Image (cartoon, rainbow over all chains, first blue to last red; front, side):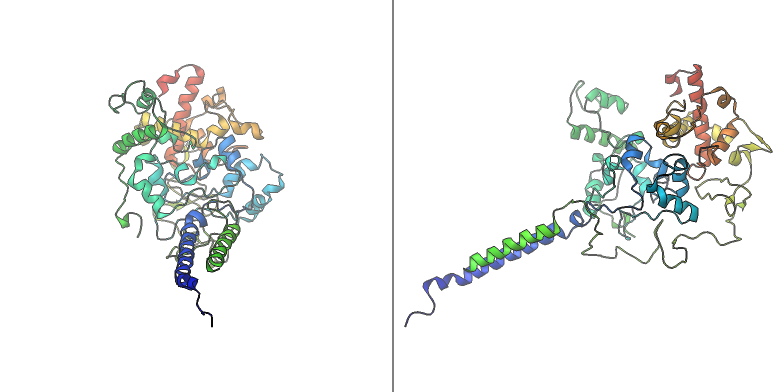
Length: 244
Length: 221
């Protein structure tokens, strides 16, 4: 009678373990990759009732973000514009465009336009727009290059980790207050230019005159300067700073 | 056998998952999948959201008819003190109908920046410069010549703010135009605070002087 278990059967438990191990790793990997706002939220690009193009309004026409989002620098919430503000121009510009029909209806009925909200912070996180803007954190840090988007999508994950990265090192995001809505702006990489922008000399910034800096270094030097100047001290370990 | 089947299955599920779920950062219309919803949605009202509780679908309520916040008057027309709680027409609140709030003295437009603001001096003009850039320059142009980028997109008339009649307008009248709009210009009162409107007026005066050649640009700053 031949043997029921061949010699190779000795390896079977090992092989089963190996396969199970690989499956478990795969499952963990899938959760790591997919079960995060990096996947579930970044790239969210709903279609809106009107194909409003930020690329045209903010990019081409160079309208400041705060013309429409008027209270972003004075309130916690960055508002959508009123229908009245849209109609301020669109009673003349593109006034018969079929694309703007929902706007005209919303204006006539007083119900407004049912825009779809894209960026949301959880209800237990109290993000305040004005605090960030008035200390020189640009819109672009959380919203990406909206001035280049025809249809707006969520560009950053807005996870708590995303917040903390910046709260622990705010110098990476601070810029001159008049450049906050200039989304494409970058710190000058020429040491003298940077110093004159900051109203100081290269020596005081611990740079050599005539030096060429990397963009990252230039931002860091500028950020450190503004951090001290504006007394930026974001909560990075105090939960109550953002959660109530 | 076991290895082949096991790893085969793993590779197939992996490819299938990638095929179905795609990669991070892909653009799409799908609503967010929230795997862990840890109290992210609370039964409270956030700004500018819908609510099915009220018949008109708005979560934010207008004040109850016939009530007025303390310190305000019943509105005949619209002007405000501070904040941005401005409505238009009937039902809006109004503060004292004085020069600061209306740009008028009695029945006439007044001239000059109200005293409590004028004392801010160059700061007020600087604030005006920033605010002019936000609210005005895309139509009227950075130098107020009526040639901003929006003009090319079909606005019929954009006033040249450095023209003779504009220079002769009293401050109060310019303030009033910002508040209520004029001809084809929409009202900006709802989005620009009283202080900022006066700041813009004071900056505009500086621009007009530059256009006249009475002030050079370096001096303005």
